[in-house]
Image (tube, rainbow over all chains, first blue to last red; front, side, top):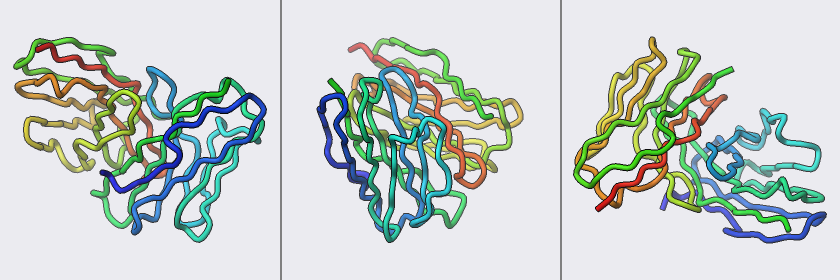
Length: 115
Length: 112
């Protein structure tokens, strides 16, 4: 158990529907990342937060995607008007930026299937 | 832009064999490098973290090395076991954790 929780583990939705995923990082971690991973590929960066501030967004994150981290605790990733190409594993990771030996910890991911 | 390559993409070995997984990166100005294991349909489990000032790290049967000047890291697995079967990913961390770039992974199968 890495301590990073993601919910739900699996989500099946119809094209055009909106979906929201939640990530609860390890409590003292101030940095939170979202990644997307498709079969046979490494995780691709989507966005990251330092506390509650969203510091960077990938160009992969179209205007249908939005992420929040209110109060610098849990984070949500919403996809509006889902498309079949959004089907992927969505991974959340967190770390604590206070030194140079801090590891990234990942959650178990949310597997999204868009029908 | 940092690019990370892992070779081979897949590897099948008999149980008990020692093996080496490779990770290459194009920008040597890295902060840390972290090796992960991923089981099918699961998240990533951290194996080893090497800071940019370090040359290697060891944990049990695993040993990871880092050569920044040549842009390479290797993960050595001793006496492989069927339970080691998984995909192994390296992540290159740059700019104080502002950039984390993953390779595409090496899928390892250890045959009993």
